Length: 194
Ligand code: URA
Ligand code: SF4
Image 1 (cartoon, rainbow, N blue to C red):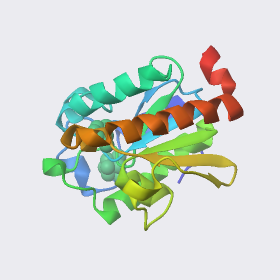
Image 2 (image 1 turned 30 degrees about the vertical axis):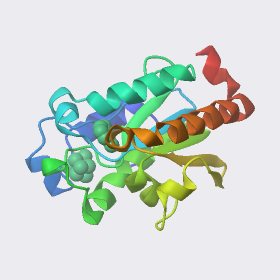
Image 3 (image 1 turned 180 degrees about the vertical axis):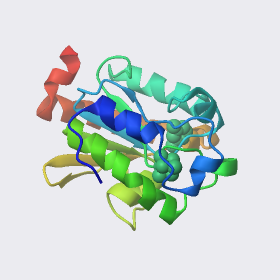
Image 4 (image 1 turned 90 degrees about the horizontal axis):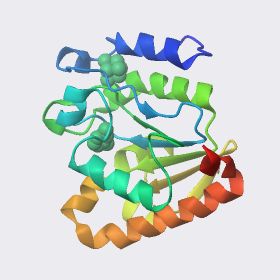
């Protein structure tokens, strides 16, 4: 993997990626959205249908819910956070990305970390939590818990699509966002001046 110091250069190369078979069925590579100078990075699983068609993460129903929850703690993709996914191309029928697809793609996310150097990473759902935090992640039990990985604080929360299927879990997810706000005030308060 090449070492990038520039987000745009990284993005351009990613947009032409053919490292895994998902390149054959995608309409758009969904690199990420938000402020590349943000200190808080959200990571989802992979693009769904709307994301694949529009080229932006979390633009469907789950995305609208995510934006509402972000707004409740003064976070916004237009201002002070960045949002990316473990895989940048849509898995057909929205199946879970295969281990080999995640492994092929993770270099792009690592490139994004390397340029941004976020203070906090929030994993949206089990797939991101397993890949980035703990291969045995039990999301219903471990959501909201921060761990320090080489100076970056990491937390997993429930995936907004899971909250749409199971709205009774929304208060739990909302608590995670309040804990996140406290943690931001502690480690990167400049987030709230962006
Ligand atoms: N779900 C995800 O995990 N990522 C997206 O970008 C959209 C839905
Ligand atoms: Fe490349 Fe990732 Fe898309 Fe696979 S999913 S083609 S590794 S950008």
